[in-house]
Length: 147
Image (cartoon, rainbow, N blue to C red; front, side, top):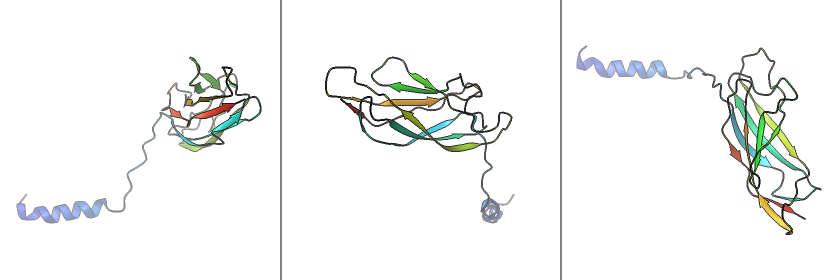
C-alpha cells in the first residue's frame, strides 16, 4: 500500500461505517433501574409504598415460572436480611427474546421499629433471572415511616 492511498482508504472506511447500527448483543444479566417511588413519607400500617422499577433482560428469562419462587430481593436498610417477592415471567418460558419494561412493587404495612414518631429507611433491590444471574442493585431515596 502506498501512503498517498491512505486518505482515500480512510474515507472509504468512514463511509462504509456510516448509518449502520451495531447489532444488538443480548446481555443475559438482567438490568434494573429505579424509575420512581410513590412517596418519601408513609404512615405506618396505613399507607402503601409503591416502588416503580424498569428492567431489561437480554435473553427473556426474567421472572419465575413457579409462583412459590421469589426472585426480587428487597433489603430494608433497618434489617440484616432481605425480603423476597415473586415476579411473574416477562416472556414465555421457551422464548429467547429481549424483554424490557416496568413493574411496580407495592409494599404495605411498613412499620416503625423504635418508639419514636418517625424513622428513615431506604430499600435496596435486585432481581435474579431463571438462569441464576443477579441484576445490579438499585436503592430508593430515604423513606420516612411515621406513626
